[in-house]
Structures are given as structure tokens and as C-alpha cells.
Amino acid sequence: MSSSAQPPAVENIQPYPRKFDGFIMPNIKNFTLTSGPGGPPCEVQHDVPALVFSAGGLIRRRNFYHIFDDGLIPLFITVNTIFRPDQEFVIVAS
Image (cartoon, rainbow, N blue to C red; front, side, top):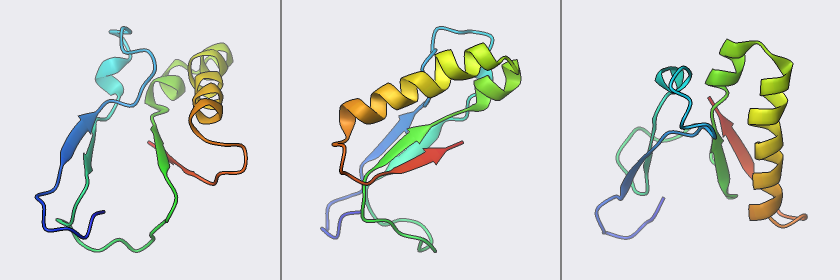
């Protein structure tokens, strides 16, 4: 959150790696990210970046191949691409 007087920036995302999968995408919850004040105060705050991830399609399939191949491996690659090895971060999972 920013402490400046600028209006909050809003971005909607669908955090799932297989956006072309028409069977799963209706089950994936959209997230609305807001960069400024506007809601009730958070009970837990972090001073590290977050990675937003949805496991909705993985759980529905109940197939370990898809859980690893379509979810956990891309998550691992993304984390290791974006963050330094010694950097802390939070995974926000839905």
C-alpha cells in the first residue's frame, strides 16, 4: 500500500498458468489487487513481496501429474525466476 494521496490503482488477475483450459478456467477465482487504502485494516501485514497463485483447477482434476506439471513446477520456476535465492516472499494461494 502506498501512503501517497494518489488514487488507488486496481488490477484484476486470474492467477492460473493454463488460461487456455476452458474446462478449468470457470473454476478459477479472479483476484482484485489494489495499491492503496480502501478497505478494513489488515490483521496481518508483510513487508515482503507476494506471489498470487490459484490451485483451484489442480484440486478439481485430482491428478498428481497435473498438480505437479501444471501447478507446482511452474510455481517453483516462477519463484526462482522472480526472487533472489536469499529473498523472502509470501505465496498467496487460493
